[in-house]
Length: 495
Image 1 (cartoon, rainbow, N blue to C red):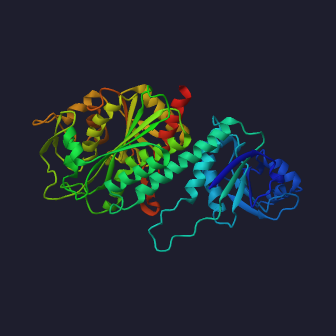
Image 2 (cartoon, rainbow, N blue to C red; image 1 turned 60 degrees about the horizontal axis):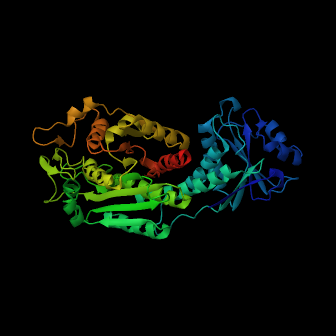
Image 3 (tube, helix red, strand yellow; image 1 turned 45 degrees about the vertical axis):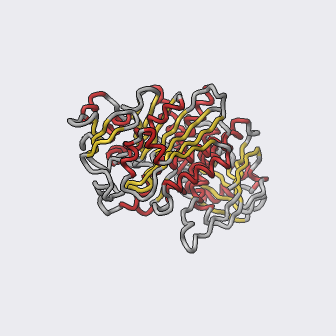
C-alpha cells in the first residue's frame, strides 16, 4: 500500500473515491465545504433528506456527482462534534476502510487530517490513518490452498488544506515503517508451531539482518551451556527442536551511545511441559513467541526509519514440551547469574528463559532494557485485551512507556513491583522458586525477573492479553510494536 500527502482541494482531486467527514446533525467537516459548493450543494441536499445522519460509524457512498473530479465520494459519520475524540477518530477510520476495501477502487483521497481531535496534532492523525489502513488489508491466509482475494485499494492520498511540513512527511514515513513491523510480527505470530520453530525465528532474523545491514548473532545450545544458561536450557530439554539465542544489533548512533536492549520471549510452542496445559485452546500457545515477534518487528521498523540511536534485540527461543528428558516439578536449576531456581511449575517457563537473556543483555552495557513477554494468564484476568501490563524498576522509564503507549493507541497500565511481593518466591531449597502462588501472579512473575535486572534501567511488558485475539477474530495483533517504536522515536527527539 502506497501513501502520499499533499495540499489539495477535494473537489479538484482526481480519484476513484474522495472521503469526507460529516458530524451528527449534518454539519460538514471543514474540508467538505468547498467540495459541497463545487457539487452545487448535492451533499447538503442528501444530508437534509436524511440519507446521511452523521452518526458515528455511518457511511454513504455517492457516485458520479457533477462539478467535482472524483468518481465517487464516501461520506463517513463522525458522531457529535462536541464528543469527537481519539477513539471516535479511530473507529471512523475502521468504518472508512471497511467500506473502501469492499469497492473496486484502486486509489482513494482522504480529507480527514483536518478533523479536530482534542489534544492530537496532525502527525498523530496521519499515524493512525496509516496503521488503520494496513490493519484493514492484513490477511493471514498464505497457507490456504485458495487465499482470499486481496482488496484492490493500493494508493492512498492524504489531502490537507496547508502544504504538509517536515513533521507530516516524517509521520507518514514512520507510520509506514511501524505498519511493516506490525505485519512482520503478525506473520510470525500466526504461523503454526511446526513451521515457526526456534530455528525458523533465527532464519528470519538473519534475513532481516541481511536486508537492513544489522549485525546478527545466533547462539546454539552448546554456546549457552558454556555461558551457564542452565535455566534457559532446562525449558528446551523436552523438545526435539534446538533452542536458539538470537541477537540483532542496529547501530544508528555513535558507538559510545549506550543502546536500548529489547528482550523478547520466543516460546514457539508452549505445551506447559510436564505441568501440561488443558487441551482447550492449547493451539493458541503458538502465540507464546509474540514477544520475540514484536522485537523483530520493532527492529524492522527502526531500521526502515533510520532512527539515530542504538538498539539491540535479544530473543531467547525454545519450545516447552513434555518428554522423558523434560524438567520436572521440584527440579532445581542454576541461572547464568548464578542464582538457583526451584521449578515448581514447568508451565511458568517464560521467566526461566528470560532471566538468562536478561543477564546476557548486560554485556551490551545498556542504557535501558525492556523485555516483552506473553508471560501470565493473571495479566489477562487483570487487564483483559485492552492494556498490556507494565512493570519497571524506575518510575521515569514507566512514565515514558506509558506516554508512548497512550500516544500510539497501544496502551499499557503500570502494576506494582513492591518488595512485599518478593517473599512469595521464597524457596526452602533454592534461592527462589519460579512461581509465587495464585495471588498476584503477574506481579510475582515480574518480581522474579526483577532479580536479574538490578544493574540497569529495566521495564517488563506482559502482553499475554494484547499480543493476540481469540475467537472469531483469532490472530496476532502486532502489539506492542507501536508502543516500542514510539518510545524509541521519543528518545531520539529528546536527544
